Image (cartoon, one colour):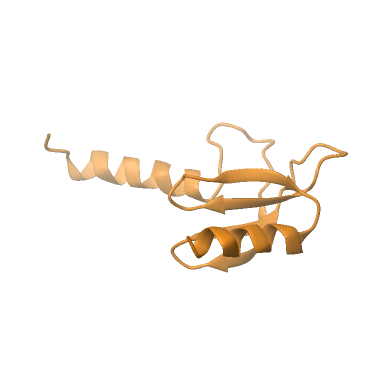
Length: 87
């Protein structure tokens, strides 16, 4: 299937927004604060939308295979990110 440059650009923007944690049409969404990045693999950071009582740190792999929040410490989240990167 041939895709126009305009359509491809729209898809690329949508995918980039998803990778950055942006939610379209949700003005109340707070930005995650990225604290550690392994280039080409993923990131760990602070989930500013975390529910009280749950861990406030997250790990996200850029290939979409892993996106979990609820870690109690950034060290725990980074350890999980490093483990995922070594697989």
